[in-house]
Length: 75
Image (cartoon, rainbow, N blue to C red; front, side, top):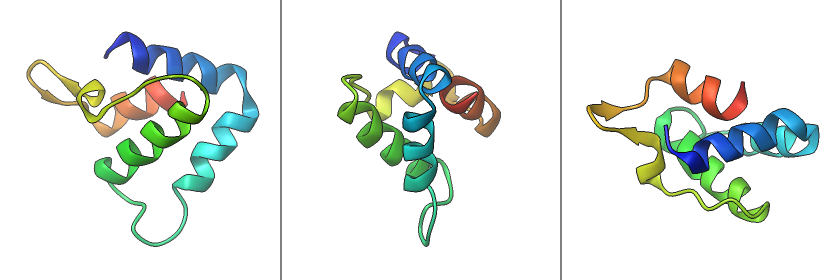
């Protein structure tokens, strides 16, 4: 997990409004799966001064699991 993902995770844990914003971005049609989560996280993070890219959600030996995404960004 990159430092930017950690920063965003800290922001989510400290600011309920940002967490709700991410949750809202993940509701509705087409918002399931890693790609939708990544896209939503990148957009919400950018609005709050944290630069994320799709590469931030990939680890050395492959993509992060759903559990790692949830723990790092929403947890």
